[in-house]
Amino acid sequence: MTRVPVNRSSAYSPPVTASSAGAPAFALDRSSPVPLYYQLAQQLEAAIEHGELRPGALLGNEIELAGRLGLSRPTVRQAIQSLVDKGLLVRRRGVGTQVVHSQVKRPLELSSLYDDLEAAGQKPATRVVSNAVEQASAEVAAALGIAEGSEVHHLERLRLSHGQPMAFLSNYVAVSRLDLDTGRLESTGLYRMMRSAGITLHSARQTVGARSATPEEARLLDEPGGAALLTMQRTAYDDTGRAVEYGAHIYRASRYAFDFQLLVRA
Amino acid sequence: MTRVPVNRSSAYSPPVTASSAGAPAFALDRSSPVPLYYQLAQQLEAAIEHGELRPGALLGNEIELAGRLGLSRPTVRQAIQSLVDKGLLVRRRGVGTQVVHSQVKRPLELSSLYDDLEAAGQKPATRVVSNAVEQASAEVAAALGIAEGSEVHHLERLRLSHGQPMAFLSNYVAVSRLDLDTGRLESTGLYRMMRSAGITLHSARQTVGARSATPEEARLLDEPGGAALLTMQRTAYDDTGRAVEYGAHIYRASRYAFDFQLLVRA
DNA sequence: GTCATCACGTTGTCCTGACAAGTTGTCATG
DNA sequence: CATGACAACTTGTCAGGACAACGTGATGAC
Image 1 (cartoon, rainbow over the protein chains, first blue to last red):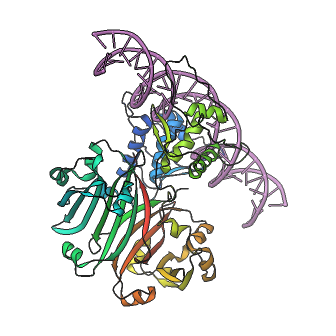
Image 2: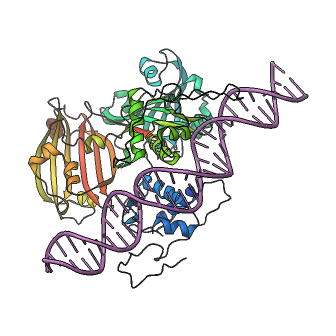
Image 3: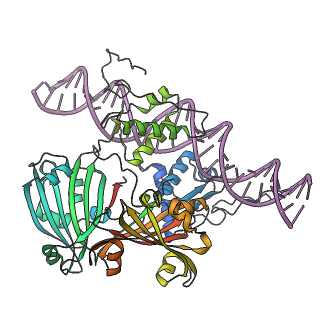
């Protein structure tokens, strides 16, 4: 650790920086294929998460930090910027960079996509109700950008948690894009299967609404008739902008809610 | 417009770039206080939105683009990167940067925060139902991170569209943070008033759910008894991480749905 | 005591230069 | 004709430097 000498005769006394208050030492591996800025960003994030950099703490100026780590300023800036984009840090010109004093550190990632994207078919048990090839209806064809009547996989799953039904998921994938195996779906999850099939997701468009349950839906989800349901339709696109998946899902409002964090982009 | 000479004797014939296919001319103003990369990003975005750069079109390599515009490569990269972050462009090493072939170009911004954040009290008429100072309940105090019983503004508004009630908004703001004037609220909007009071929003945490309407709520929103409602609770934080606003809103599910786009961060 | 002024420290922007790594098409080879 | 090696092109990463813009605190004038 380096100590910053304080010039007592100076007219300006700088604020206490993280470096003089006990900054964690970062270990950077130049031989690693992982980019340096990314290594630094990860270690900074870990330090924040770990509490070594407390909320409100100043990070120390970029130039000194770069010199201390043996990096150039652009590299350090890139690392810091990525954490600013994540909402972990705030930069202020003339002031410095400080750890955001946030009550909510955990759920930084967008959920609602991820809880279905990563956890699609994870520990919360999933029962495949049906898995068949159908002809695309007008609604599905429009969402996937294919011709009406084209063959699509239609996948229906019931999501359970603690033995209780949570949601009913109805997904459509163009047949040409993927091979669907019922067995693997219960263990691997839909999005993971897409990924391993070489499809890289890029973006998704979601609509979240509500409506009253039909008798059939109420029975399926173990809800009283006419209960309020949360609905979600999503179309997911790959790199090239082609729609790869369309889903129309319903959730038990009494047991589920979408929860996410937004950042105000300056 | 500059034409790129093609060397016929070259063993490698490069693909057709946007420049040789008729790239729009960008006008950059160096004397403007607006950063160059931002000017370029905006003009690129406009060109994409306008259709001058069609989906799938290659942008031309960064070095040549930089030379053509009289900019350095980092500046051009910064502009391109901002559009990549927005999901408008995709970069591929060895290939180039191309406009994402997306069906949905318009609603790139997150709505659901913005439609309340920017449009809070805009053309969709807003009627202030009540505006009073109360003592914070346990729920409100917890959300705002203040002591129970502290004084808070409690603001209730009815949002109308086309003469029909759309939503009922209930907001809480700590008294010490803001002065609320009923008159200005109907024209200016809550978030705009905060902004002009020097509060810069940083992030927000939202929960979206659904439930059946109580008789009172049904009457207020002109819905039949027990109709499904969309609910949203939001806590907004400023730079320093302090909660500045808490809102518990209900929407007519028959007339409103949250609509937003997600990007998969690589 | 109050206020404007100034110096200082910080991030913001921009430049030039260089090499590494991934992708694609061409060409020579079998 | 198939296939592998190669070259060209592109973005990714990193360095080092320079000046501008902004905010803060201290200083000095009033």
